[in-house]
Image 1 (cartoon, rainbow, N blue to C red):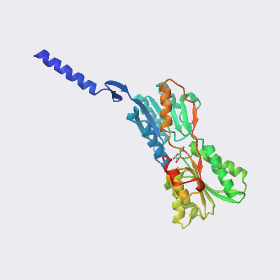
Image 2 (image 1 turned 120 degrees about the vertical axis):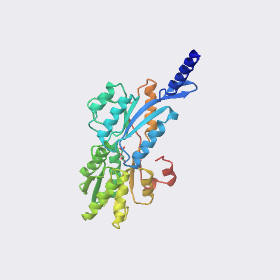
Image 3 (image 1 turned 180 degrees about the vertical axis):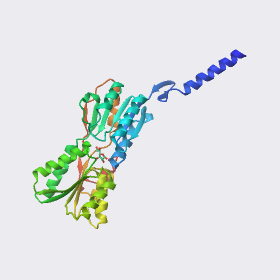
Image 4 (image 1 turned 30 degrees about the vertical axis):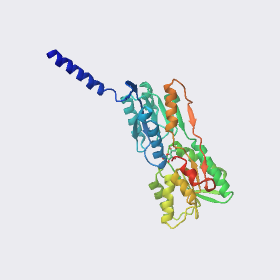
Length: 325
Ligand code: GZL
């Protein structure tokens, strides 16, 4: 009888242990296929662009696709990203994906990831580090090119007319801010008839964008154009203008970046005049990179995403609805 009880106990123990097995094991017709674990350090949830970017990554790295995604929202703070990366290392993830808040300050933590043998993929913004071997590859936008695109439109739109510009910058030190600001500065350098009347960072948020434009209006500054480094700050600027009884697109023009669907509808309504695309749908792109690495292949070190820009002539409701964000 004792032997029977012992055998029963051991059988139950085996069943229990197999049920507690690896959380990353996906049962696949009996044999266990290991899920690929991806630790994703995301900037935050500051804008439509960022939320679309997160959704794209979550859809790409789903359990159905064979992944377990560990998402960390850094609330736009680099120190939280560094902590998240260390947590990913301690959890032994298979890949780390970093959407960096800022360009600098990554060398130490990426050295730790390399020491742990975990490949790091940088997405969206660029990082500036001494040894680019500390990350496997990068995929994102050419922000200087985006800024130049906006300035080309301003030149076409205003020709040689005097232009007083209010400049709403993104997070200072992020490559999106650096590149888009460089584009405007290059335009200011060759257009003496252009005047920068105000420049400050709205941190890519709607609330800060509104606050800055309210301050400009309260100071009684006259201006012809708002150069907003993302759509959410442009939404805030529009709120401030309307609150002051002004008509965006009439009394002054707005140039923006991201080209999210809400902003493109504001082009149709005339509130925003030009919007330079910054495509956030990086999920499938990063997944394709990881799958290349899983096959032992070498993806390109740097991949720039193809992007366009929109004005009223180019836009239709159908086009907006076809874009995915
Ligand atoms: C651009 C991205 C920027 C967006 C903003 O690639 O880093 O951050 O332009 C977002 O909307 O907050």
